[in-house]
Length: 553
Ligand SMILES: *[C@@H]1O[C@H](CO)[C@@H](O)[C@H](O)[C@H]1NC(C)=O
Ligand SMILES: *[C@@H]1O[C@H](CO)[C@@H](O)[C@H](O)[C@H]1NC(C)=O
Ligand SMILES: *[C@@H]1O[C@H](CO)[C@@H](O)[C@H](O)[C@H]1NC(C)=O
Ligand SMILES: *[C@@H]1O[C@H](CO)[C@@H](O)[C@H](O)[C@H]1NC(C)=O
Ligand SMILES: *[C@@H]1O[C@H](CO)[C@@H](O)[C@H](O)[C@H]1NC(C)=O
Ligand SMILES: *[C@@H]1O[C@H](CO)[C@@H](O)[C@H](O)[C@H]1NC(C)=O
Ligand SMILES: *[C@@H]1O[C@H](CO)[C@@H](O)[C@H](O)[C@H]1NC(C)=O
Ligand SMILES: *[C@@H]1O[C@H](CO)[C@@H](O)[C@H](O)[C@H]1NC(C)=O
Ligand SMILES: *[C@@H]1O[C@H](CO)[C@@H](O)[C@H](O)[C@H]1NC(C)=O
Ligand SMILES: *[C@@H]1O[C@H](CO)[C@@H](O)[C@H](O)[C@H]1NC(C)=O
View 1: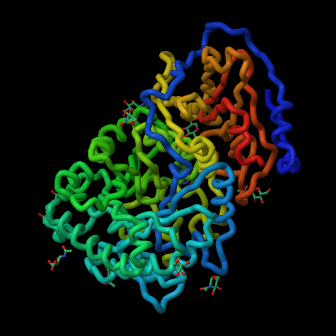
View 2 (view 1 turned 180 degrees about the vertical axis):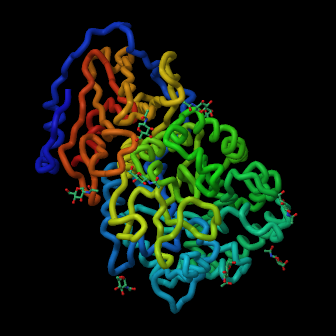
View 3 (view 1 turned 60 degrees about the vertical axis):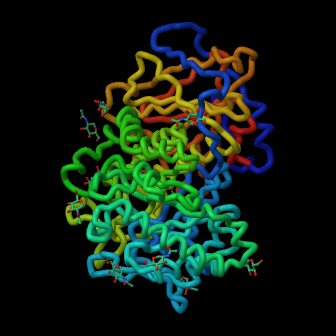
């Protein structure tokens, strides 16, 4: 049964409306054809580490900082409305202003907002930031914290140290959680360290020690002690095979953390790419939604390093990721498919004990590849990445500033990890369901089942001969036996290739200007315990009705 909550009532009476919801019993219980049972362990034993509300975080390419966020006096309304929505739904993302352009970023005390130096085609040679850049961090919702990213690319200790010192001087107190020295060192000219892990580690340790000393001086003894010594992200490498091995499983044995400086080991994850024509043909909807392929990439390319970090007693994170490197694939990553991909991928890393994942947002980088599918706009104007969750400005290349369908997945994730210390496990896909396009997860709080997530990522198009609905039976779980009900929010769009965020809904609402539009729709699961999930839909099931109301009050 569905019930509707009008947006007008939302602020006053959401709890009352939830209590008033009806239970409708549809089909009789039974093992009839086409109904699958989910086996759901009651206790958290064997589930992931405890996650919190900053699990689903973001990385933004710093060269385009002003386009995305504006400045202190003119903040970008759309961006902040969207961030505020995520926070209202229980998320507390962290922000890493990082990516390729951090490696040519410099601080100049006389400069203002971040400014790019580019060639006529939009290639970014340099991004110059002044005090206003760090001051603009205080525009962000309360509780959002930042990674201070430092330029390693220019091979200048002065440049890196000046950025670090400026960030602690001008950003508001406690807004910096960590420093990161360099982005994807695997892509630097190989003459720098001559493919020697030891040479890289030596320079990294030498510089971080000197930067620590300068930062501690700027902070003063008390604040420096509070910050602690474990304040660095290490690695920041991609999974591409290059001559330089600096993923955590190479760095840790080479002694990167011999001085206990590493907070998080960061790995970058891009399972698909449009950087060259060979890989671009594989960057399809059918492939990016293939759960088997995504899990395989995580297990083979990422997990060995993740395990090395965990075994060393450290946290690990996906410090930058998205579906398709080199700014996505138009008509794939700018559609509803990307929303499903975000949920699939973030949960894959959550169960592999990543402490956070930083979804990357930016624009095409001309110097990244000469063979890429994407490009900047006319006269080098930004060609926003088609994997972004919103286009922050009107642009010649991408049209009006707007939210994209994938944004709604952030509200799904915000609600999934809204409760502190949530643990998650993947559930066995019942036999008979297509494993390539299905994933189910159970969430636990204080060792009790709290939520379920079910993703049916099978691509469903207007011309599909079936809607690929999977019907699951969850009533064998104790909660329901005792007559306790469950509530469900659905992430949906007409078809997997929907490109209009107005037609993409989370619990019945869309978010075109960063506000909820439409009535909140929370479904009640009846005593029969049946849950239907169409192809290209994802649902979050709540066993506590107060959690289901998240974001509505
Ligand atoms: C902020 O941006 C606005 C609009 O682009 C501009 O007019 C203003 O000068 C900027 N403010 C500062 C302090 O740079
Ligand atoms: C930093 O390196 C980039 C790329 O090599 C170069 O274009 C830029 O001029 C350098 N910046 C400085 C300040 O040296
Ligand atoms: C940070 O805290 C110090 C010491 O309490 C204070 O002097 C300084 O003004 C604060 N800085 C900012 C940017 O709020
Ligand atoms: C860093 O390297 C320089 C040059 O090799 C050396 O003089 C200095 O002592 C080193 N500093 C640290 C903290 O390792
Ligand atoms: C580093 O390794 C790569 C890939 O194996 C190779 O192409 C390159 O020539 C090597 N560079 C140096 C300086 O040895
Ligand atoms: C999904 O990916 C797996 C692993 O790469 C592959 O074996 C399988 O054929 C793919 N399924 C579809 C439907 O493309
Ligand atoms: C994307 O799809 C639209 C509408 O189907 C089509 O007009 C456009 O050419 C496609 N763009 C690309 C880059 O394939
Ligand atoms: C994740 O952490 C939990 C709790 O420590 C552990 O039981 C589980 O084996 C870990 N899983 C992976 C994939 O590392
Ligand atoms: C169904 O529609 C999709 C998206 O428009 C298209 O890529 C595909 O080729 C169509 N399939 C058939 C069998 O016509
Ligand atoms: C979405 O809906 C709003 C409000 O009706 C409208 O202004 C906007 O143009 C629509 N956007 C698209 C892409 O259809």
